[in-house]
Image 1 (spheres, rainbow, N blue to C red):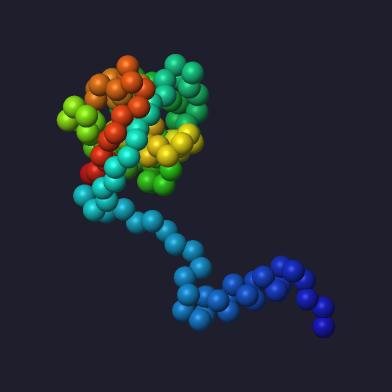
Image 2 (cartoon, rainbow, N blue to C red):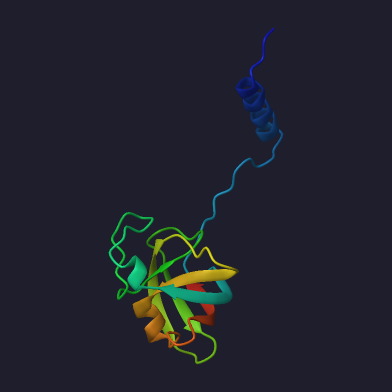
Length: 128
């Protein structure tokens, strides 16, 4: 009997799944149920007009943001923990891809919470 690597892998996944183990997980986000904190950064001119991960054109003046896992279209309230200023943004891109940052804001959103000069800020994020 001849086994291919694909057949063996398929059999292993099916056996693993039938044993009650979870093979894949999907993050489900409910309004107000998910909050996090960390460092935010922003992006602007260099990406203005380029296509975002969800297919729309990036507008550096819009109230949008990039997040690694929240679904596109999710609205989140981002609060600068240094000055208390907040902004509501819509997730339309993936990222950030630098360091341990939790969210990348558009330049317009970053201006609203007063982080243009510093470039980064400690923030809290609440899913709306």
